[in-house]
Every structure is written in structure tokens, then in C-alpha cells.
Amino acid sequence: MVANHMNLADPPILAVCLGRRRPYFMAKEDLFSSRFSKYFIRGFGAFPVKRGRIDRQAFRQAEGLLNEGNIVVMFPEGRRSQNGQLQNAFPGSAMVAMRCDVPILPIAIAGTEKLKGPFWWLRRRR
Image (cartoon, rainbow, N blue to C red; front, side, top):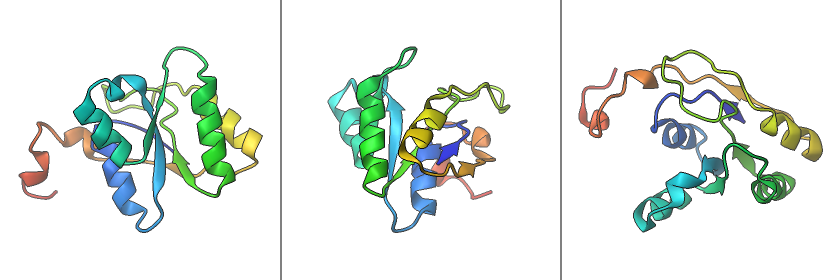
């Protein structure tokens, strides 16, 4: 799966929408720097990727998961959109899909750019 990315809430929202199928997320390695965030992020099935270069280890991990029949979610823009518009995508997700001979399911996330502050989930649902 590939999706646009506008808010930190995007991965958990995607995970909930998939129901019983557990997705694995490719996430920037900075998110794994502290024990708390590492524990929390890994709990969502994320594994680290080094940004700004080819991370062969992350690609091998994604390929292994796909070859086992798992769902791997990537945000091909490589970062959250600051203006809510699609950004240019990096070719990594297409490369992994071609190597594993799996289809790419594009997902459009809308509305999460309006979620502001750490307690957005306590506010009235929109």
C-alpha cells in the first residue's frame, strides 16, 4: 500500500481501517531514537528506514514481509505534506513492488491535516 501523509495520525488510522490484517509501516529512523517512541512505533508494526539514501536493509525487510504475504505500507513522498498537497514521490515503493511482483494499492488520506494538537482525538468527531 502507498498513501499520502499529512499527519502523525495517518499510520494508526490506516492500521485501524485494515481490520484484522496487520500492516507493517516503513518509518523514518528518527522515530526510533527514544525508547518510548521506539516501543510505540514498533507496536504499530513499523520498521526503520534511513532517509535521503538507499537503505538496503529496510528494502530487504519490506521484501521479506511482502514475500510472506504481509501488507507493507509506505509513504512514497518521504515526509508529511505541509500544505495538504501531494508531493513528488520517491521510487522506492515501486521498486520493492516490482521486485516482489506484488500490486500497489494506492490509498488517499483526507482530512487528517485538520487534526491539530496532541489531544485531537478527544475533540468532537468531524
